[in-house]
Length: 128
Image 1: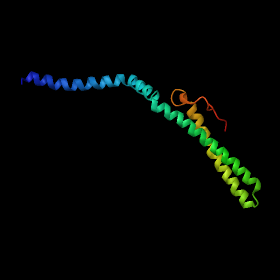
Image 2: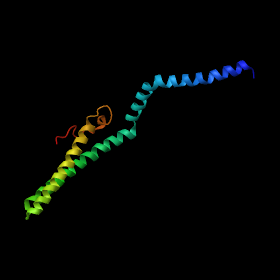
Image 3: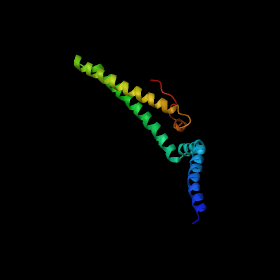
């Protein structure tokens, strides 16, 4: 192999690497948008998001049921310590319900990603 061919080969490889990196750098934003759109609109993401909101809403409903049950128990509690325990349970359940509602509302407000797949029979916002 001639010396000029060797020099040309040595210069070509780094040039190709630099060109490849440059191409990837300048097209990253476009490729990122396309990849995000494909992932968001995929059937797996849609199904996951629908199920996610139903699960979250069901969790909130179960907290409300638990609160009602604890309030019923409080009404018939006979001792001070029993009432105190039930009040502590109520405070904990209400706190969990509030966190679940805040998470639900935050996810439902993601109109470009997850929130756009909120089912029509679920609320778009839940008041704590």
